[in-house]
Image 1 (cartoon, rainbow, N blue to C red):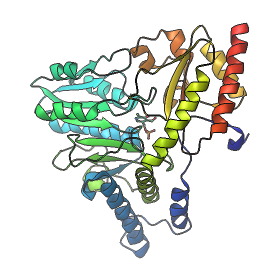
Image 2 (spheres, protein in one colour):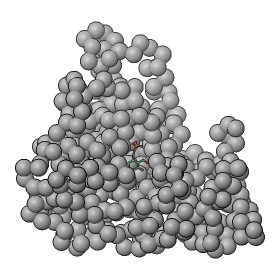
Image 3 (tube, rainbow, N blue to C red):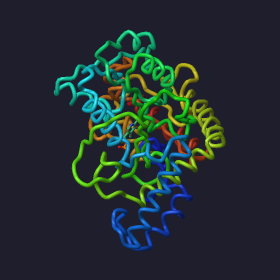
Length: 382
Ligand SMILES: Cc1ncc(COP(=O)(O)O)c(C=O)c1O
């Protein structure tokens, strides 16, 4: 069945390519694929494309081109920032701080460091997923070298006060990494006046293809390489660069930044429509408290519903939403984010993450809510 027949509300997992991205990469796809490290004309052309992409991303973020490292995506950028910082700073200390609701690419990096002699404090969050700034301040010791917090939670859309957390870290001389994979395009990100030392971004959340991302790494912050090979990406991330991906990423980043306010207005309107309609579905719980959420992500749960049956029926109706994060949706394990917020296993499994894209229409929201209501009604009758 084609995508046009699907009600696709899973844009936080992967969103449609932007038309601007399609048109800018098409000219590259039709030409010879030079290697940016080659000295011939095709290689130089690829290198020029890569440089232009790096400069453009740096300009959007208010960074210097040398502070942008291309990676294969958000996972690699998070791994590199965390593992690379821990390796580079281990002579200074071995204590690290993060939060229990982070993305697996962050949590698993910290778990691997624990196996290698580092101590990690996993801060608990409150029932909304909020991080307590005082708890963070209190967790910093003289041995702390790195803290990592996401800007926007990928399952609930909650916006964390990362600028304040980064200021606390800076005051204590602790490096601060931020997973901004779900934040870029919704929150203006400018690094000049920020205390954040590194930021991970991912292409396929922004309208570029999967397989490209980048790490902003503030000048002066040493990082150890995690892979070995050539001297690409300042000797930090070896391997032939994906220059077409980088061009796609830079176009997506610039387009998202240019349209941020306009898009956010549209997301707010769609979100209001979605919430109005969802609220009329029996026994629904909308997992939001207050307004510190990005409007493109909405989590909701159903009491006394079999989560597996719910997802099978959504799929049969050709409705694409997530049960938590895409990377864990193949398994029946309940979301670690929702369980950290105090949900029991059954409620966490009967939870949907609905995520909107720039292309989402009011009609899709109407059709989705109608379909969901039919499914919930029938599941409650059984
Ligand atoms: C918050 C967050 N961080 C990191 C990632 C990983 O990014 P990628 O899929 O590009 O590896 C994701 C992907 O879902 C995410 O939502």
